[in-house]
Image (tube, rainbow, N blue to C red; front, side, top):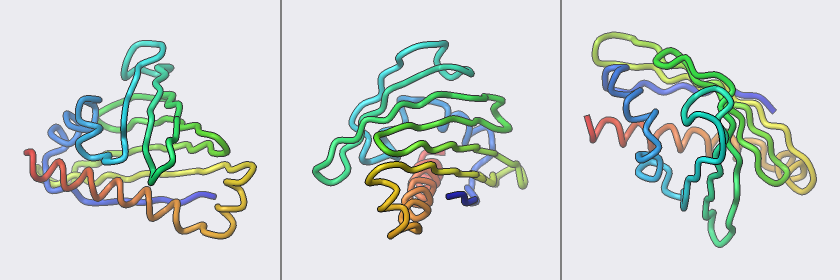
Length: 145
């Protein structure tokens, strides 16, 4: 399953990147994030691996993030792996003008097991959840810049 999302953020790209690239900010816009733990590699650089734990309803979800490319402020790509889910995300940040940044996210989900059934029955739920995170980040940036 593949989809592309985009959202305009009313802030300069430098501000967007500063807030996006700081792991201390993640829990401020990812409300379900419980913990973030760096596992290996140089933090923020290609090959860095981290463990993220989310509480989704009553369910605890452990996810492994691997940065596959980091060329900020232009783009940053990574994979996110959880039980039954592999999500490849390519994030692009375009400067529309001095005070507006376009965040584009190319997503690809590979599902297995029970998640494959959920993906088949509710394919739009993955896109909606991804866009909700983008909206939450936009709100965080616009209220903190």
